[in-house]
Structures are given as structure tokens and as C-alpha cells.
Image (cartoon, rainbow, N blue to C red; front, side, top):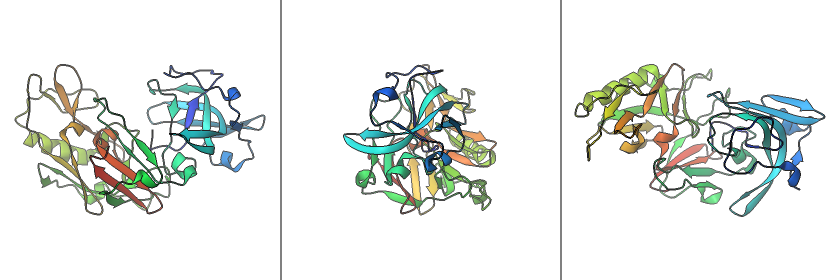
Length: 319
């Protein structure tokens, strides 16, 4: 379920190269509603990378982590909790590789023309349950997608990158104190550079390098009661909390345009990385000129995307 990409796809028979998935491979030959898209169809022209074989439109999509999918472009009927939607454009992947961990494919929820929300012409929302818990994460399309009590921030558009949902991140607070980070660090430029993307397909929030350094150093300065534990993978700040029943940690708040403040639960930014009680500060820096708010920091909020109104909503405890 990825707000950072548009094309939905599933692994398909016959499979030239597929990763192991939990469910049986989809066989398009057994579906009466599966229809190939011709190379002359306007849907085919909307693909960023496309090919043609025997007048059959072919697609290819690559992702930032090196994952990719290649296959036939088609339309099919999708069923969501008993509601059928006909002629949804999707990929039938015959050559797929990546860290999809048993999933049959990917549901593209981006803002581009080929995403499911765009094709359905409906608002949608999701609420990501704690990844270390047992709860499910609901995804809702249509009138019930936006819950009462939501607070809203404008969706920003990047004319160069129509897929992504940009939000205005105006600042960050640690321990109730606003950090000295220039607004320019997070602003979306008229050239299309910079900005902050809200992305369900990225795990950890990545901030431009100087902003991350300020956040990390401020958190460390207020967490002197926590024994340090070096670094782990992409995390450069970790703590040895094994054997402790409870700890006091500095608060972290994200301030968005429109007066929206996301008061992150500690579980959203202190991430367990082993069974010994090592927890790492759940942010990281990036050498890119843009930042990403990842899914770990989105946990526990119902986040609604209302493109018709140009806004994104946040509601706590609505999972």
C-alpha cells in the first residue's frame, strides 16, 4: 500500500522470475474480466516506461530500493469488501524482484493518473497500526474515508512530480521547544526541488541532513538519562534500555501548515532493533534536497487524502 507510487500490480502466471508470495499467483487466463490494454490505448501512453509486443502494452516500474516489476498492462475488476470496481488499470507482473516480503504485489495510492484513488475518483484514508502489535490497518475509500475530528493541512503540488503528496512542514519541537531550523530546509521550491513528502511506502522519516542533525542533537541533549548504545543499520543514535520497566523520553512534535501539530507517541520514534532492549531514534538524515515523513511516524493516525479539496487530514486514535 504505497502513497509514493501510482501503478498497482500483482504477480502473474506465467512467471518468468517472481519472488515468493503468500497467496497463489494470479492467473489472468482464468479471469473473464481481465482485458489486455493495446499499445494505442490512451492508458498505455500514461505509463512512464512502456513497451509494445504484439499490440499488447507492456509496463516497467522501478522503486528507490532497487525493487522492480515488469509485465503486461491490463484492466481488471477489483473487489473491495464486496464492492466491485470495473476496468481498473493495473500491471500483471511476470518479472518481479524486491523486498515485498510475501505480498502479492502493490496497491498504488499516489496522486498520478494511474493510481487507484485517481481511477476511482474518491478520497481515501488509512490508519497504520503498530507494526509490532497484532491489529490490522484499515484502508477506506469514499464518503467514510474522512473521520470527524480531523485536522487539515494543505496538500502541496509539485508540477514536476505529480505522484507525490507534499505537505508543508513548518518546524519540529523536542521537549516542547521549537528547534532552530530554517523554513527553507523544508520548503517546496518553484523549480520542483525540496519539499516534504508524506509516504506510506517509506519506513523511517528521512530529513535533509542539516535538519536531521539539529533534531538528533537536540534529542540527545534532552535524553541524558538514557544509556547510549552506538548505531545500528541506518540509525546513528541508539539506546540500551534492556531491563528498564519504563523511561522518560523527550517529546517530538511535527508542525504542519494550517496549525496542525502531530504529537508523536514515543513508539513512533524509539524503535526496537533487537531482543536485548536496544532502541534507536527513528529518524535518519538524507543527502537529498527533499524530506520524507515515513510510515513509522504515521502510526496511530488516521490520515485522509482529499485531493478534491486539496488537503490531507489527521485524526488521532481513529484506527
